[in-house]
Length: 227
Image (cartoon, rainbow, N blue to C red; front, top):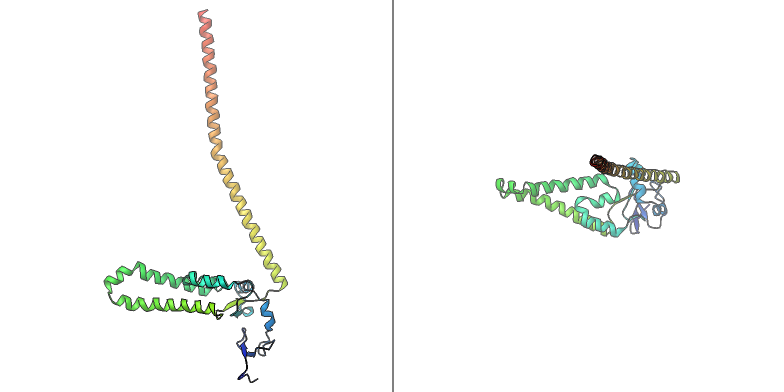
């Protein structure tokens, strides 16, 4: 099909050029209307299960990803790869995080050493690295703002969605059970700390009572002897 001079769009699955009015991709058969049902949460689940073939990367924010939040993540946490972690692209996020700490390690910890040993060579090596890192980060901000940042999405079936919800509920119940056990243990520890103190005070009281009783007996014996 000749599409020259006509408004087109790229299929997010296969990259095939399609007409804007098309409801289905001619190459892979993707129904474009189904993309409205796709969520980033389902994409994260698919990636965690290593089902990459069922994940589609879209440039438009899905219904469960807030664009303003993604922009803030990119601006304030982008140097750490926060925007990649937010949408579920953990591998690239880890690369960004490691790259940030590598730059920090070179620039801060060994700064004085490089300056004293290498002198001017330090800036010729460290400067371009920092510049490239900053340019990539600024480019990511531009991509997020102008809808060219790729976000993984997918569609879960009803059975998979139920299973996912059940797993989350089980995890939540397990966390609550662990918290309750921890609270119970703390209470038992507090009781075990206070019980010895109570027993010590009771022992002191008992000894005082015994002493007072012995003193009374001695007084009675003294009075009997005087009489």
